Image 1 (spheres, rainbow, N blue to C red):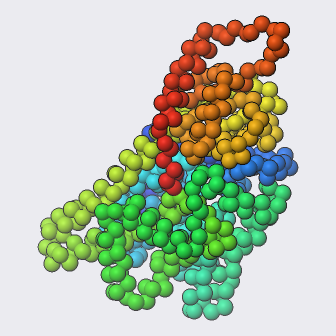
Image 2 (image 1 turned 60 degrees about the vertical axis):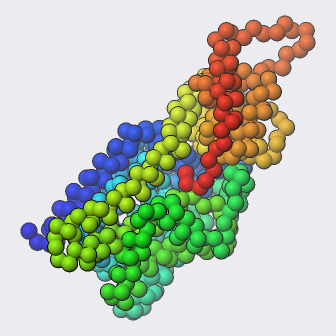
Image 3 (image 1 turned 90 degrees about the vertical axis):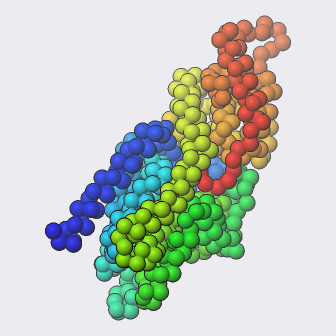
Amino acid sequence: MSRGGARAWWAVGLFGAHLLQALWFAHLYPESRYDTDLLAYFVYFRNWLAHDTSLQQVSYFVQPKPLLVFTLGPMANVSLAFACSALASATLGSLVYLIGCQAFGPATGLLFSGLLLLDGSKGILTLKSSADLYVACFLFLTVYLAQVGRLGAASVALLLSALVKPVTAPCAVYFLTREDQGTRRWIWAAVPLLALPLTLLSNQVLLGGIHISDQFLREFPTLRDAPAIGPGEVLHFALWTQLIKNRFLSSASWGLVGLILWIAADRRRLTSPLLLIPLLFVGGYLLLSVVAPYMPFFRFYWPLEVWFLGFVAFGIVESARRLASGRQGVQVAVTAVLLCFVTDDYVVHQLSYRDNFALPFEAGMTFVRSAGSVLQQQRRTDQNILAPLTFLPYLMWELPGRAELFLSAEQASVQEAGASPDWVLDVPAIYGSPRAREFVARLVGAGEYTPQLTDGKAALLVRRPRLSTAAPPARRPVIAVAAGARYVGGALASRRRRLDTRPGA
């Protein structure tokens, strides 16, 4: 079999393996498909069809990603969206193999894709149909197409990436380094920049203003009680906090070794798409921080993590080869030992994510879906609802009512709003800030609300009707009293716990 044929078969096999990884995560965390951002795309598209731009009145709502709003939005089904995301995730697994083969050799390419299978972040981002998964897929497609000389197709792939997140648009600078393309390089560099006016047009039709989405970046750090980062902190967060402290604590040295050895072998690689495009991607976030300081999440820089993983794989393979001095058995043994460091990093990270984020969201989303059924039956369409910011898109999608009737607890805690909402969806483990959790605890503890549904850790409450003094007090059913007592006990216990507000969700 020819080398090209063997690579094609390996690429297909790895596609299947990464597809199975996505299905396995869907089995582990089925509720995570109801991701905040994905449901927001559904709401945006539905409102667009109805010529409704009222989301601009919501204190904070997910920024619209044009490509995802107009592709995943029409599906209006989390399972269909997950199917698309699983295919994108599997494509990424094949792409990193092909890129690794081209840049490092077949063995390293296979290890690169294999290590990506261990990355729990990829499984979670796939399950959530995350914008950062699609950004990574299109960015690595751009790298691969540039490697094989198909620059026109590469510029289109980069355009698609920028239509998800415009921070990837600066990667177009790479095409200007290709002097062998003559004047065509200016065309290839201009194509991805079309994403900028298209994104502004998207803001106009979805929100009624081209700059409306800027307020989301400004308000979000306040709602989360977390600092925004500026230009002086982006590189530190992306390169030190993200890669070394958070993801590759035990194996970062092998990535640095691999990067140095790879460049030292051929200085022309300093202009390689595998080096320039990921670094220009970080530059896009740097430019964003100049225009609008933002609160970072680790998933924002996940494509950079995938890129660095390739150099970790190369550093391990090359170091083992040099240490073995031609002895095949020694090389395999050294590689296996060094791979333990990468495995340890991924296992520790995945366990931390499961305990701090995945399982609390699973439990919270299960309760919210049950609460949604109760609200559909009992809530009047003119009644407002206070809920954690995370669950607002779900409530907007499932329940009728104007956008201003859906209130985030995080925003209410900032404003200390005096009016009491008609309904309160209290999920203490999911609030974006301790201040929001404490605000809702005071609100429901004032005695104005009756639990309609509770699982002991979360509750759906309705405000009691204000009766005249002549009217006899209403008798509450015994079951409601018992449920309320159970919920209050759980709520008091949860107040002693503090929400982990580190970026990384």
